[in-house]
Image (cartoon, rainbow, N blue to C red; front, side, top):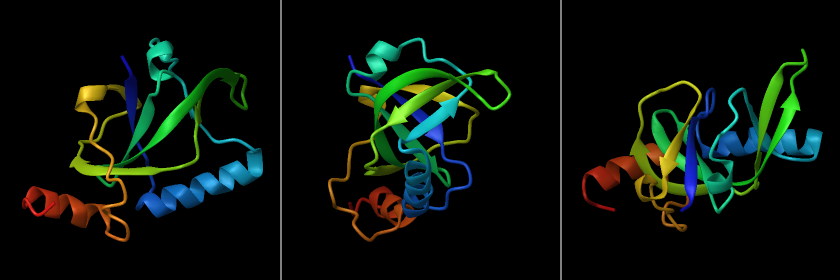
Length: 136
């Protein structure tokens, strides 16, 4: 069964700002990744179609497919795990999410569905409000 991760995108205002930050890393380093201290123990399940679901300003806003997991070292030589990411950010049905540290596993049946282009041009918080009102 596919397994996902959920992670706060700290300092990000919206999907567009996450995209801009990631474009900078991709241009500078030639690949896209998120570094974490914790090594996922369920890597095989994560790499079987799993994604990172990004929480932006208290809402699960988008996801990004995981394409690899690599061991690495940070600048001071401490162990680090690189979660390699496919560049496209896929908007998902916004869902409130309380803050937490690090990342968490997210079961496939608990993951919000992709929007599939429905929310093009609509801010995530407005989409969440419309969904809560039953208009979406």
